[in-house]
Image (cartoon, rainbow, N blue to C red):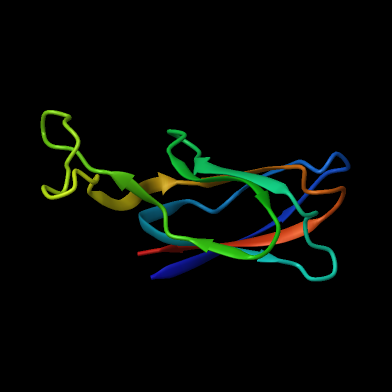
Amino acid sequence: MKRYKVTVTTDGSGNATAYSPRVSGEIHQIEYVKDGSNGYAAGVDFTITGEATGIGLWTQSDVNASAVVAPRQATHSQVGVASLYAAGGTAVQARIGMSNDRVKIALAQGGASKVGVFHIVVA
């Protein structure tokens, strides 16, 4: 596994966009670590995607503390039909793969000149 650390600093309006280095593999988790003394304001909004395709990795509003997510996506058959667990009709999910792409981290409402760190764990 490999960990990519991205430090993101907001502008005077509380917004920011930052990118990871290029990654290839399955995203296992994304960890947001709030800086205790100069962390984002309560209620920061995240939109984290793959840069090339826009594939959604993590979208959440009103985040107040450090958090960890393990993003997954629905799987499909060869004819594009959603794969479901038979008993409950619940979608089968798998890790999201990226190939030579960057993770785009866009923030809003983070407060002026605030800092946060994101760790992207890829296998």
